[in-house]
Every structure is written in C-alpha cells, then in structure tokens.
Image 1: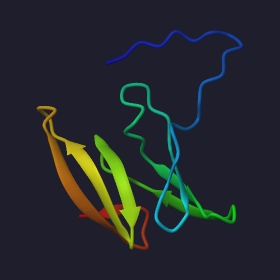
Image 2: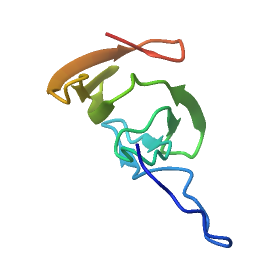
Image 3: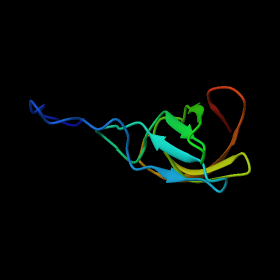
Amino acid sequence: MSWRYAMVGQPMPLYGSPFADADGNVWLPSYRLAYPQEGSPYTVISSDGEWLGQVEAPPRFRILDVTGGLVLGVLRDEMDVENVVVYGLVGGPSLVR
C-alpha cells in the first residue's frame, strides 16, 4: 500500500516513463502509485503519431522490450520473486502468454 497526499494545484501524471519498441512505436504506461514502472494498460502510438491502441498487461508485469509481436518482461509473483517471461501480442486488448 502507498499513501499519496493530494496537493491542490499539483497535477497527477497520467503516464509513467515512455519507451520505444523496435518498430519505432511509443509505449506509454499508465501511471501507478505503488509500482510506477509496472504500468497497465499501455497506450501504443506509432512513430507517425497515430494511436494504435492499448495493451493490457498482467498485474506486476514490467515490460523490458517489444519486437516482432513479442513482449519480453519481468513478472513478479506473490512472493516478489521476479521471473522473465515472453508474451505474444494478439489482435485483442490483452497479452497472451
């Protein structure tokens, strides 16, 4: 759990740190207070500025790299043990393992 004191006049971020995949698309993770580097969902924008959609990532999943329709990342289990996993992107709104 985390605490956040709202300050009047202080904006809350909508996204965490963006990153680019091998195709030049920009991935914007939704901002999360507890683990800001583990954003879900991710908004994907092409290098031309076209909105490509959103990708729902599993909870506690941090993306490391995206290329060729595959997503490499780290998945933390309930004991906070990190496992390297690869998911495939499909046409739907979620990642498939």
